[in-house]
Length: 299
Image 1 (cartoon, rainbow, N blue to C red):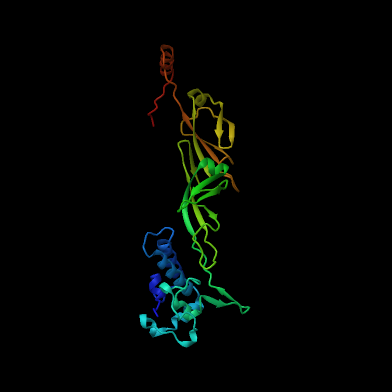
Image 2 (cartoon, one colour):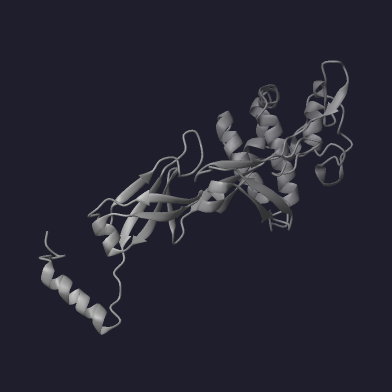
């Protein structure tokens, strides 16, 4: 019977911690998952990884396995002691029992892919599927209003995803049961979508605060006037203070991304200069030049 070196399969040392074992299993399971891997032996490797992880993640199974002691290098000549059970000695095609999904070596140690339940019955070892992750870009407007998006997974499967109101970059959306498949009736893993809120030409997001530029006329800046501003939450009216300059920011409390507390909206004032298209307008600029002692480059 072929000895299974579970530590070698998972690429860890025999004194590896539980966290190291889990980390290595997740990395290799992603690499050899039959749905995504191009390796010719991906399915076999994936089964071996699942079996190795089933043993090494469980303290009692790992202790039983480690009791092999100095015999662990016996390789192909490995013969299990009689007390490890009689199941699995007949051999199965490819070394795996199609019913249990485990190898002859595993079954010789733990039974035919089964363990005794507390009530004396039997149940197959179940292995939950691996959690998976992906990234998703979200516009500031969708982050503000909430939205429904359709995403396409590997293999062509489409899912409808709900974007919650107020979500920010780095937050994750959990899609239950949409991760890696379970083994032997185990539950599927979950899919976690990491959100990246994307700025656009008009809006910029910092935390939950939204920043936007608003053009104003020179006379609005100089004299001070009320102007309409279209926010993510609809149109509001703001009062421009007299003698405002480009770059002045006006804060609209609670008009940023929703939440507890909500973010704020910062309106950045930008003075737009009218174009002089005719002689009369050019003359007006000449009059301004003569009436103002103004140097825009003075510090």
